[in-house]
Length: 239
Image (cartoon, rainbow, N blue to C red; front, side, top):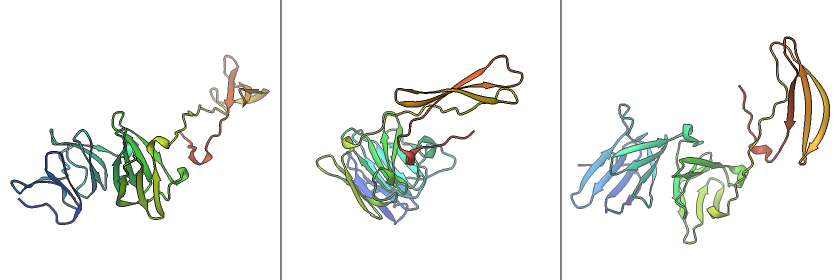
């Protein structure tokens, strides 16, 4: 009938009047103010439905009654009806696991700050969109529990170099999808490229060529298109 750890990092009441407390080292606690009894939720290596870590930082109660807990090892979705946790980490697209703050916008998206920027989480699609200092953040590192939602829908997050104030609807995301850019290819064991022409197509420089190699049945062709939108956000995938 006691709290699991005295180091409390966040607390708040849900719609049922239950007081929820996150602790640093003791997991999540629920306190019934009428019976004055605690219920503990701790990490268990044997239980895949348990909270991901006993080191909890922040918490958010959404409009559907779900409790979102930010821990040192990722974002946790807690369903009070089932008593089960679902964990979101790097595999799901979260760039950093140490969650500092959680806010919800008017479209029911979660905005999560950490030490690698801010992430927007769509609860329906369960997809993350990540923002960094390259997108205008004061820094990639934000402080724990330093965030709020203003009455006009704007979100405020504080970090180590100031704060960011923005309205989620004002952020425009690029819809450009990069095409695969093949610069050469190998047929069997050898290849030789012979460029035959150059042209412009829809304003994009094009190169067409022909590749001939030993033991091939016919010529291979390739075309290269180039689109540079944001060099800072370009990624290179290697086999």
